[in-house]
Length: 115
Length: 110
Image (cartoon, rainbow over all chains, first blue to last red; front, top):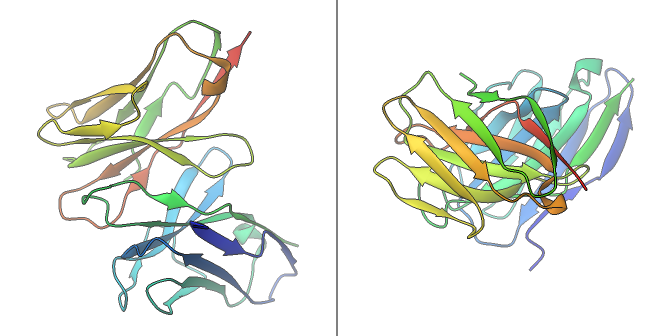
């Protein structure tokens, strides 16, 4: 099992460019999440999908859109990248926060730089 | 609202003990603990649920004070492999998401 995979691993964009970060999981989890991690800020939730067909905003959704393509895949799109979106992006999946086995499994991350 | 972790950073010698705290202003249903090594993804350590249920790795212990909405992670007889940044994630009853704290950086020296 690959667990949670993310593509690309690294990306450099110019201000105003768009891109889509891809995430896939092979654990048959219902819930999927997109976080961004900035120094000293911890993990901040951008969007999440509690189950296939649903998506909801997290703490920092502005400037992002998501698509839950199917149960396996959850993509994050930056329509017009800004330097403030320079960050490390993690995708995660879980059965559900309050259902066994509880834990969120994280992908390896995408390091995005916007110049 | 983001939970508050303390301390922000701690440096220990191998074999010493550490306590990392996580505090919330909201009535919590669960507290999750994760560890992240530099350049890697966070990894689950344990979960503490309202009512006393706990699940996690054998060598990790933690507590959850439901009255104070505080959790503490206890790292005893620390090993070099314990180094990393520790995050608590808090969940409300019925919520489908976690809110993570800002992290505590733990450095273990030989």
